[in-house]
Length: 599
Image (cartoon, rainbow, N blue to C red; front, side, top):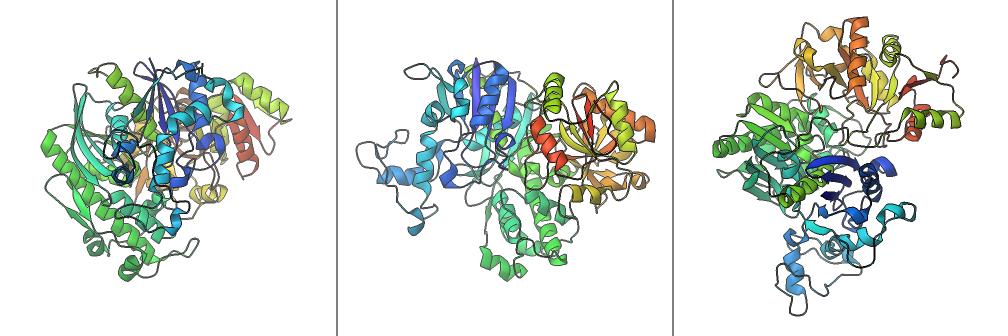
């Protein structure tokens, strides 16, 4: 049984292919189109399906669209809080029928000229029209160059279409991928159809939602609003605000705490100020590219602490309701690794696991896994996400052919780990392109930029190479069996961190040996790796340790500013030659800009 999962309603559009409960392929559209996040979360982009990502998934599975049994789309238009308004205004007998589509709806020619309805947007009719036509768009809308795998026989497609509620897709992406048979489940993001936060319990193959918070009450929207206020791009740059928080003190806690009111039922309400209200509280908003000062750092720190405390309270309620030992997290807010570490260290659960594509891309995974799970009778056991290497890959033959076609000098390695470690020990910064691409926003050793953590100036060098803001930290990857020697956590520190979604304290006595990865607050966002997860990556760390005594490298995503992570050999070479990288290690080959030798 083949199930295709699709996320397309908002941003981070993605596709996933599941075969009988096992994930075959997963990828985000941005990696193929070079449009970061695939698109902006706007109502007039809702029609765009991730055709390139779908095409990859079909190719990886050796199938075509005609072979698909189920299609799971991670948004349910009938659950959208604007749908009732459209039904009430719809002509004919279908008005008021909760699961029937009206024959027509009122669609303003110029929505921006119309006042917003209470709790909604004048763009809602257009947004919903695009969503409900997704099945037809999948059937008929593939670009010309991708048509081959999208051709269908005459008549209705054989697949069964599933509209999966957005937060259920987030939840399923956690509980059907986590290493637990029984777990509490918490999801937080900006918004779905109407839910912004949900809490539930998964056990014996069944999931039950215990609490939910509805729009406009949203911790994710609060973080987005402050991201915009601080001059960054909302629904994109929230991680920058998290990094800024480390430089500030939470002197605006009272203002933020006054926006969030927790209740005794696993929920909360919010008073979310507009731009004028925020300026009354915090002073003038920062313009994009403007100078950053202590006020901005303190706003970020205050926001971060309010978020952490609110989520800790929600987790405490959820633990009391379920008695579960384990917690699985998803939703865009779950990419906040500082918050995740607070949950691990100060929360009531023994183990905390975060799905690595926790943002909206992961809803394609959750929708597919949920539709598959239900179709197979909700079995008690499920697939477990040991790694996120689910994207495209290229063989050494393909890579060599492309290097020769490009008329580049390169060398083939007989000991790739040793040769690469020698470059790193010499202070070189390398692009690392190996195996299947990562699913999710973190580079995890397939499409990475790697460097030694030993030089004190390496963070600034990497930020210069990637044209990033100076305050941005870089992260360490460490051999899993050596992690505890270098990094500590209050609780759960023995749990692996293969997805770089938790911060750890750097042991003070060792911080001076790896200054490049120590953030301003003495922490580091750690990735652990085992040989069975990524053999070449693990071998490289071993080789670097043999030469330096340090089982750690700097790992950041292989891209430059404004670009998604590289996907193909062409992407890797273009990024390499248009940045100050020193060498490219691609498959079993090394390309150098200076003294690289001939093939």
